[in-house]
Length: 199
Length: 416
Image (cartoon, rainbow over all chains, first blue to last red; front, side, top):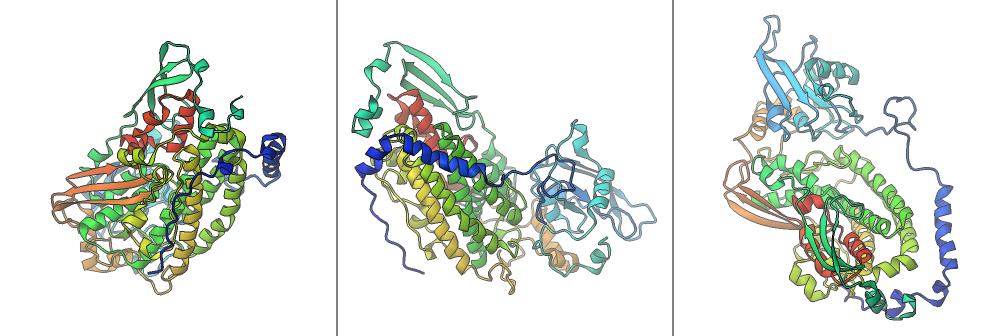
């Protein structure tokens, strides 16, 4: 434990601190001094970037989130092209906003690796708060959050994502292992099956 | 001319000419640009002088405390973000500290240092915006834009660390949900290297600014005794000359091992609060630099030092263990599914942390189940805002705007 700095006694009001000096009361020099600051800013590189939300070719046009950003969801597929989700309802249980709705059903006979799959998997993104608890709770690395932050839509119905839409997004983002629980640089040690399904 | 009066306090006192002798009821807010959030003031004005000021709150009531009774301890973290949307990380950390006290957990040193660094960055983000908005309310528009640039830089850091800019949801009971990125110290140091110049610029624009001084000095004055009796905390209390800071009075995390001062002023007016906020930002820089030096493992964390408690009955096990190890998978299920895992002992706990606005307390009553029986938030804004009629009554309407800006009242945590 380091030595703590002794706390200074409250500074008593010093008169010169709280009244204007003669030079400051001349008014014009002070105005010019302030204008010097604002003019300096005028010649600086602008801090803002364009946000059009559609053209993603130029890095000046949009903000690139770091890996591990919590944007729109997507679902991943396994090696056979089936949805990875096993309908265990963990994401729905972990969701603080109660926006995930799943209906489970027994798998078709040709799915050898598991017994249940989601016939209906809907995320109501209007309720979603993008906390990432679903990705954290998923025990099979099926759901993940993408770096998409452009979350606008024209109708409400568009923002209720079903299984097909989520899987199509998954194709777009690639099916690599979730970065959410990991350091953004990735930590090795996933199962061979999970690594095999990456891309 | 008011400037001819050498006494700054007498200079701002309303003159008899500003009264007309009959009163008029006026609503300031809830939709008024000078109201910070949806706040309504029922005021009686006599000419330009406020005779009676009655704040009405509850326009942003969201039922956070009731929601807590239907969420488990980890799920409430996302709600604590939304309570104070100026400094969500401080709320996350405050709630996590309260929960760890309830559960009897000790966060590893690396987790504590990372939390302290993020809490202080969040304090800078809150103070700098509060100073900027104070400037905006008093006509200094450029300063507001410059402070927002600094906050954007901070939000980039928050985004890299937590995965979101504002709704951070960063902490969990027993730690944080992931380690910081490897370039975290460089990111923070790069930001801190440029911050003092930005603070100097703000001070150059405001400290000796004639308009800013006239509208701040002697406005909203609270005496030391009044501030204490109203339960005021944070920069407002320290501006009244009381060196009370939870980080020193009741140290949590690793604050007792860090060297910092508690800036105080004696005057207790709006100008003093502004100066205290500026001084606190410089102290926060000092704390962060020390914490970065002492950060166990550094940014790379080659030794894989933990940031959270290693008990997998509390924190979710790492995903590779969940996929490979039966026992970890069981822990993972038990923590997540309602009615299993993560049960605190029966009892109650009050824990407070120093949020940018003052003492942020969480009073949690546990009945031994996975859901809290009751969570009561002690928001600093509520107590600070309670002094507002005292500050504004008998003053001009424009003084009320100045005093309101200096309280930095956050409607989200005020109404909860």
